Amino acid sequence: MPSLEEELFPSTPGKFKDRNRHFHRCFASTSTMFLWALFLIALTASYLCFQSFVDSGNRYFSATWGGHHWEKQVRTSAQIRRSHGMSVLVTGAAGFVGSHVSLALKKRGDGVVGLDNFNNYYDPSLKKARKNLLNEQDIFVVEGDINDSKLLLKLFDIAGFTHVMHLAAQAGVRYAMENPNSYVHSNIAGLVTLLEACKNANPQPAIVWASSSSVYGLNEKVPFSESDRTDQPASLYAATKKAGEEITHTYNHIYGLSITGLRFFTVYGPWGRPDMAYFSFTRNILQGKPITVYRGKNRVDLARDFTYIDDVVKGCIGSLDTSGKSTGSGGKKRGPAPYRIFNLGNTSPVTVPMMVGMLEKHLKVKAKKNFVVMPGNGDVPFTHANISSARKEFGMREARRK
Ligand SMILES: *[C@@H]1O[C@H](CO)[C@@H](O)[C@H](O)[C@H]1NC(C)=O
Ligand SMILES: *[C@@H]1O[C@H](CO)[C@@H](O)[C@H](O)[C@H]1NC(C)=O
Image (cartoon, rainbow, N blue to C red; front, side, top):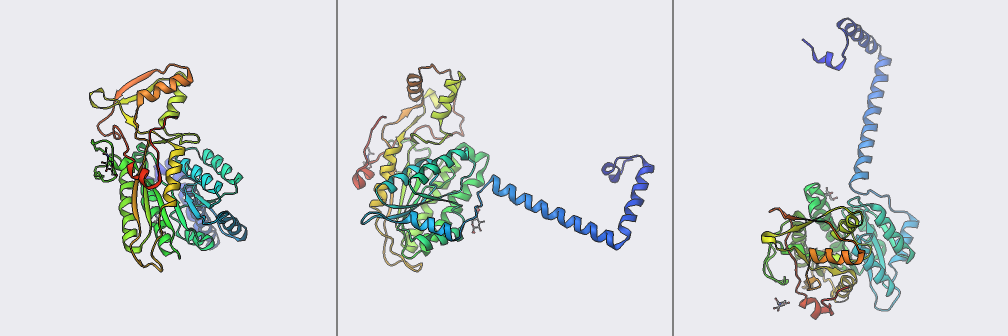
């Protein structure tokens, strides 16, 4: 009968005995034992090193930050160059919306410091390219994670931000089935760490942050208004964004932080996220490959309230300009602070076949469409924003087709 040892050392019985004896001889002297121990320690250490390398490489960027030169870059980037300007920490600055908002703020003379962890949810080279655009306009982008409280403390210490534009998040609906913890890390833990830093800062900044139209979940009443129910999310992404709205509310209530939550409706435009359908459709159409077009129940077309990036940037900046001050200091509230939620949409939903039609027209190629009924556990069938609040508050405009 084969024993365990035989499986580990497959050999003929005679030879196995020899090897066993050899082992004994090896451990017999103390000096060889010492060498073995050293070898084992080295092995363990290199394994641990490799593990942490794999961790930081694969999941979250663990950057080295700090030092005189680094601090100087942060300070310079945060400098305000207009009267009554603001100094803004933009999280997710190498992202789609983050890069556009950073450039727009800088252009009008506000101080901007970016923060981004350059994770590999999609090709980080696109994020690096956006970062280069920002660098060209003298915007410094810190490579680090929003859940790094020491880094945030340092940044607030150096730059004393008046505002935080919080756009860092784990995006995407389907990716949650693959990596649910990534949503918890960024959208929950990271958010709380950021709010803690804002709460402790003196003076406290006002916060504008990206929630999502996905919080409307399976609602059927259109258009979606801010006062509608948001308690039936259809994805973990939506659930973490909804949780964010509740978490920011408590920080507003307890610590007097000025909070504005923006429910973005399917933002599109140049430098957009490559996981969006208009990119994958375009690629497949040009390659002559079929595209999958999902349909709802009873062959109803899916629709999204596609919103152009420039409109979203205006909404973000309008929110910052009208945010009102945080009222806390030393972690205590001195009076009530604003808590606002706005839809940022286009109020003009486009069905997926309409979008494909536009791509066909501009690419001058006919798409091969596979219509598939959306599975019962899929994303929401349609979105449609009521933006009358944002229109009233900062002149958000509607129904623009690009
Ligand atoms: C976020 O940071 C906190 C505090 O440093 C830490 O305890 C927690 O494990 C981190 N959470 C995640 C999901 O990385
Ligand atoms: C849009 O929202 C406003 C509140 O901001 C509400 O008064 C109005 O009735 C809503 N419009 C529709 C068509 O639901």
